[in-house]
Amino acid sequence: MSPWILLLIVVVYFSLLIVISYLTSRGADNATFFVGNRKSPWFLVAYGMIGASISGVTFISIPGEVGNSMFSYMQVVFGYFAGYLVIANVLLPLYYRMNLSSIYVYLEKRFGWHSYKTGAFYFLLSRIIGASFRLYLVAMVIDAFVLSRFGIPFWVSVCITISLIYIYSYKAGIRTIVYTDTLQTTFLLLGVILSIVMISKELGFSFSDIISHISDSRYSKLFIWDWRPGNNFFKHFLSGMFICITMTGLDQDMMQKNLSCRNINDAKKNMYWMSSLLIIVNVFFLSLGALLYIYSNTKGIMIEHFAQPDLAKKCPIELLYPGTGIFSCSKTDALFPFLVFNYLSPTVGIVFIVGLIAAAYSSADSALTALTTSFCVDFLNFREDNQRMGVRKLVHVGFSLVLIIVILTFSAITNQSVINSLFTIAGYTYGPLLGLFSFGILTRYTTNEKWVPIITLLAIGLSYLTSLYSGALFNGYKVGFEIVVLNGLLVFGGLYLTRRREGKITGNW
Image (cartoon, rainbow, N blue to C red; front, side, top):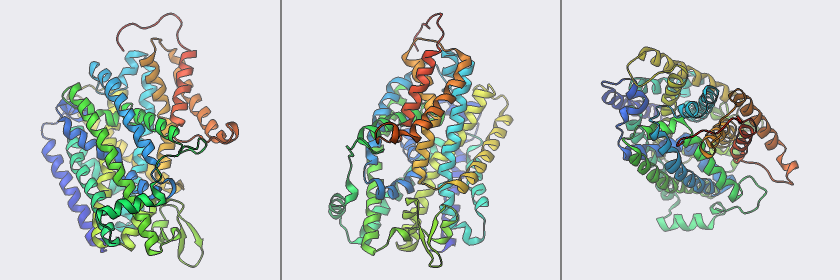
């Protein structure tokens, strides 16, 4: 496919986003940027959050991971659904009752200054890493198949990727994001559905053939009951539930959209509809992954062929047979783009690029807005007024630069599937938030504030050591994504042991 066609697609796509930004940013102030003046329609928030929850990681990593984990990822998705119910019925009522712009203000009112700043810090760390992983993935593919063909180096591709987000989000923030996410979710869903349709057409499959071939293949295995692997059902389900609670319910990025709804009832409706639709959408992604492997098997394409030299510079991908041009892909992330640009029709390539950009930017743009909001509210003490708007814009620029630096660093060191990297890191950075919020909600004790930062650091260290030696310690049991639960429990236990003895709090928390 001509790189000029792909470049034109990118230009047209971002022109649409900039037009939406212009229309939604008139009269914008800090209240618009932080919570959309609390006027966002719940159905737009729900629809847009599908794209924000999926991201470019899902668009590439989940179909590729089917080759390793089959349909077992759905165990995590079922856990997500349970987690969303907790968010809708426990966390959202709390946030609305306290009329929060940043959810970490709860920690200040419940415990004190140290807990507040600790929670806000772990959010900033978590979201910087998470957004960088997602943007790295899309920058890698766009660079390899579009910009590098014009002689543009990878670091410039990353700068362009971040700059485009800044351009359409710096003024109206969350108000713009609600509407751009709606557009991007539409393109994302069209991307995966049309990819399934066109790949099935190339295989000569009817709709019933798709179902039967996937059902009969080894990729359709859904439940893993062996207690030892990291993808055991109960570990996956509990991990999914707590990952959802932490990465959505305790995450300013995702909650900022919910807090922009008109009232708590609208926010709950948003959460119920979004969580239900997300199950269906993930079935589509896993089905796409199974079809990609069925297609590869049909065409005699081996996994050694999934990567190519221009993509190998970014993955990294280890050369398996020196001098032959054959590469061994240590990351199944390369499967989908490799097939798209080497075997499937140019139409599939267009659909892939649009879907990938939509998936990546629907989560990354809101992340940049949430980082700016959290830093301004939690560390610079901003409120929902027109004060210091120039400072807020400088903070937006600052976090754009931070994301660029982290992406370039990640591109130099990563050697595993991005979806696994993302959930592994999230277990360590979101665990302290899980422990802090659960201690505040489930108990009436107050904390010994000076110990809070130390407890969270110790919990992360102990969690890492447990994960590292879990096989030897627990008779072959390997800790997987459920590390976030262990981390949260350690923080909770540390807070309990160091709690203040002079009394309990009163009131409705």
